[in-house]
Image (cartoon, rainbow, N blue to C red):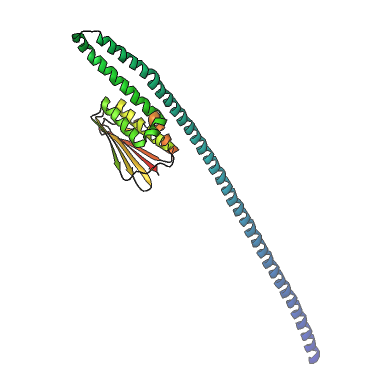
Length: 285
């Protein structure tokens, strides 16, 4: 009986062990499957996330490239517009210079000659009355000829950048200014593109013209400071000045800044009421 009981006990124990091993195996198998499934899902999630990030980065780069291309195209278009306007203005000034020199100059010369002939036919006491008129006519003729030279870019290039500025200052000094001086610092460096000489000269002309019309100044000054890598130009007057915010959108200032941008130069205009005006132009050589 004892042996039979032991056999039955062992049989039940073996069945339990088998059942436990089966359950344990199924559980282990189930745990491994879940682990593999979890790893697979994580891998898929990482791959999808990476693809989304890559797509987003590529999209941003493409978008930025399109924006940069559009900006460059707009800048190129603006530069072409400014270039066209500058060339048109130069041609207009050149034509005006020719008209002043050829037509107006000839008329003044003819008037001066006629006045001289008329004076020869008058008595000495009457001649004195014509002296002021004759002198004014001669000064007008000289002024017209001098102005015609500054309006013709070929003449400016022929006589040189610094000489053109000196002539312009001398012309203005005769008109109304007590002093109009050019100061040169450093060793002169030739312009790689001589068209830039014309553009800078026109910027200075615009500044000087505004000083004549608005500033009520008595003194003008232009400083050319030749540095190793750039030319620093400072133009100033001692006039009544103005509030810079009131003329920020003025055509004169816009014209000067657009010309400066055309040659990759920076332009800064500063002024305060009763403290004059100062222009600083930084041109890379």
